Image (tube, rainbow, N blue to C red):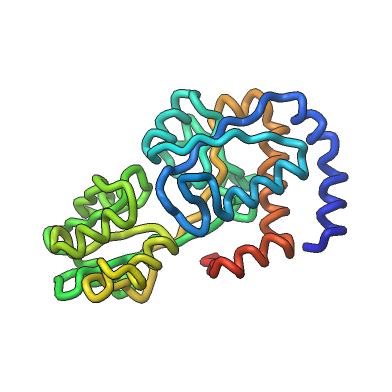
Length: 261
């Protein structure tokens, strides 16, 4: 999208932006481990570049808090933060959260922060495999990151998902030392580590096909949305607009981002 188009969008949102400017800053929680290129514990990465542009478009203000992912979700549920950065839609999260939706109630991927893939990693010499259809894991054991939706999805399919690790590096280390044969981890940071980190090269390998793809949203507390739906809808709309801008697309390209949808 051109600069001119962004200006037009800004004009359309002027009323909403003026309204939002009177409201207090939104308190946003994000995961305190590396999820490059999207985020780092120090608040760097594409998510923050995108949200910085949203702040400018709408005269908004966001305050960020890095915390363990499970704690981010818990505090959102309790109303201790207003939103979380990069959360997946899930039935059990819907009673206390909101994401951008289509008129039929399905998630609106065009207004998500980003899309990512759950990737399968296997211990070299182990007995795990993934061909895009059938996941084989000895003892049905799969290591995943704490608080991630993939754990429940695996359990629903009869796997024993162990969500006891915080970071991709922790999970890959457990593969490398033989504790597990299969890990399912999110995104480019896990892939980078598996291919480049000396601790894992030759000990773990990434399966060719992703296990699943997922949209990650700026998820807000249900009460926050109910108090000011116009403000939140404007933010989600601006996220979608910035994602399509030439400027932001270039940042994604420079970071090596692949689009899965």
